[in-house]
Image 1 (tube, rainbow, N blue to C red):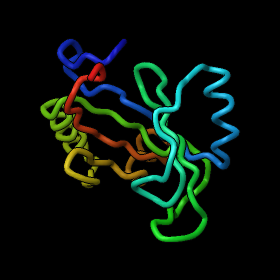
Image 2: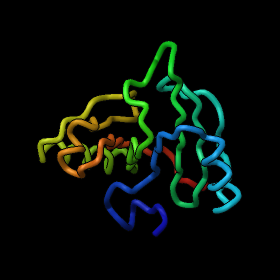
Image 3: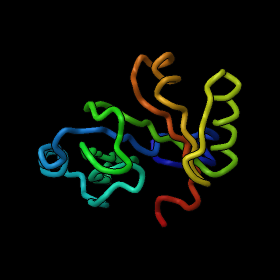
Image 4: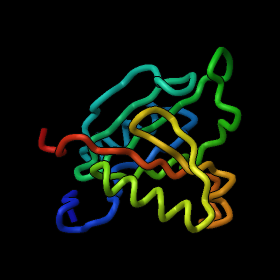
Length: 143
């Protein structure tokens, strides 16, 4: 079940983002216990807080420890699954967004390669207060 858009013809799961209270506690379990490696550890580009991206094989798992003060403050800092990230090449990502829109789910631009369906819309579908992000993949995971 690896990423291969030519075989699946659909958007693939690229990653998960989880909001955590203490990244260092989660890192111990995920790196030492599961053997996942840290691909990035630093400040989040999207909201105030520390983010760690873990290479979990065919997907990435992003841990976000949001700041409790300062600019770019995340309004809901409750630990939870905060994002499902799916995507593929531009035609697959565009088709997925069109199907989501046709089913009544609105999306908003994050930047030129990412759009998301807000948690308010997804909670009615999945029962989870999580966003669904659709990402355009511009190169293969192999580089």
